[in-house]
Image 1 (tube, helix red, strand yellow):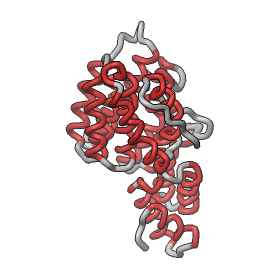
Image 2 (cartoon, rainbow, N blue to C red; image 1 turned 30 degrees about the horizontal axis):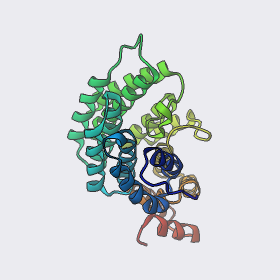
Image 3 (tube, helix red, strand yellow; image 1 turned 180 degrees about the horizontal axis):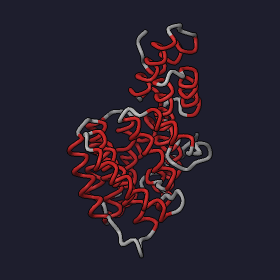
Image 4 (cartoon, one colour; image 1 turned 180 degrees about the vertical axis):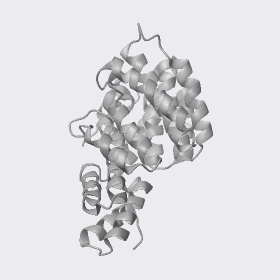
Length: 296
């Protein structure tokens, strides 16, 4: 994808960001490693007038750093985005990724407390809630649920997921505020996260039952959520002895998001389980082991 460098005008940086966003949503990490530093410098040079585009860019940069496990850089970007946020919903969009960062770092208590605080802050009046408010609140509830289920708080996880389901039903569809792919939320996203929770508590049977009701192809949830779901399904297949289908899911992710897969330790775990179960290594398995960094 060719990106035009525009210089330091606000309109120029906005245009460059619009052209760059497909690289984020499409998991083109190598291209972003080249494009992002000068774009961040240009956004920084805009001064106070460039606050809005700078916040958006810092949110995306923080998300990318979490994806690629550059946690300190992610924290810096997200804290700066939070400092510059103009309102509660813009702040919550950053906090959503901060919660994900804490989850990836294993800071489950901190993630839970932060998500609960912001779920309370963003809870709308359901009778008059806007789609943006429902999406924001729903995502904070999903973060509450994710932290709780990992922190051995199953009741809290179920309660948060139930409320997120209510927000999704009220929306009635997958919705992205201001076309922000990071905040896409709706009934399908909730199902994906329900399957993820089932995987966390080692219920592969439940993962596969939920997966049967999720129309994975042609969906609007972010590639990260969709691919994470496919990993959950692959793991469930492997745990139930269906190693061929498990490996097929890994191949599906590799075909769709080849730069996303190598950053997933979970993928190494799944492939390790497949190889242990199959015992006989194929050339395709060896190639996949190279992709995910699994020593053989």
